[in-house]
Image 1 (tube, rainbow, N blue to C red):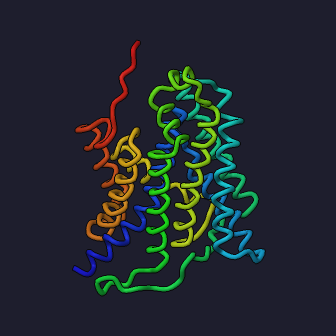
Image 2: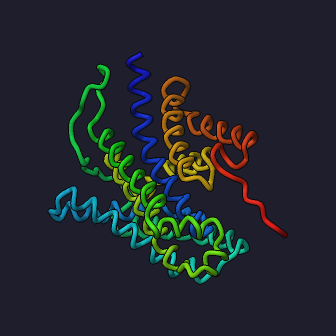
Amino acid sequence: MGDLISVVVSGMANGSAYALLALGIVIIFRSTDTVNFAIGDMGTVSVFVALSAITAGVPVALAFLLAIVVAGVLGTVSERVLIRPLGHGHHVLFVALVVTIGLGLVLQAAMGAFWGHEARAFPPLVDGWINVFSVPISLNKIAASVVALIAMGFVAWFFGYMPFGIAMRASAEDPLAARMLGFKTGRIATIAWFLGCALAAIAMLFLAAESSLNPYIAHAPLFRAFAGVFLGGMTSMPGAVLGGFIIGVLDNVAGTYISANYRDTIVFAVIVAVLFIRPAGFMGVLRKERV
């Protein structure tokens, strides 16, 4: 029983990072109709910047804040320079997807050239362990879950009660109507990309602290984040968060009790089964287009 609790709690902690990445993906997609495959690499770049700052003597907490800002700025610049010139409409969705994949590859090459390809240790935000139901859990994992929940709560409050957040939701539902009503869709896209990439930075910070940092650390978490998005629904922010946590627990349980070699296969099989039953995900809504 103790082992199962430890596996579930650890999966929840990992799932918080997947949930943050998934939430960032959905925020950007709903606001700009762009699937940002480079979001994990943007977060990784910001973590390398934070590590360089820590090495130079900057406090860890301040370096964490620096990483969040760097990822947000990198996201807004990418949207402005690479995505916005493509224009609006679903006909550019595939083009934007290819652009973000290419951007991710460029960022990986740049990180390897500047910081090297070898793995580096990254200091945790909180050091130590605590017993939960007689199961030792690292304080860094607990801190990751708490910070993730706070960030998700802020996003829910922003989109639910802030006028600009409500405007972003309206723009996501009907961009043409939003422009006709005078909403500045360019500003909405900027905020969405900043917020989505900032969430990715938080996720990558804790993932790097749990293992190590290298230019390719985002590959596996991004796969699991997209699995969470498809599970919860590409158009649902709560669904993306819930899907991320479910994938984290499922991944840990499969790796512990079945086989670590097949954990990705099991996760993928579950997603395929869900998409057969609910193509839009459990909390998503299929969009109907007039042609």
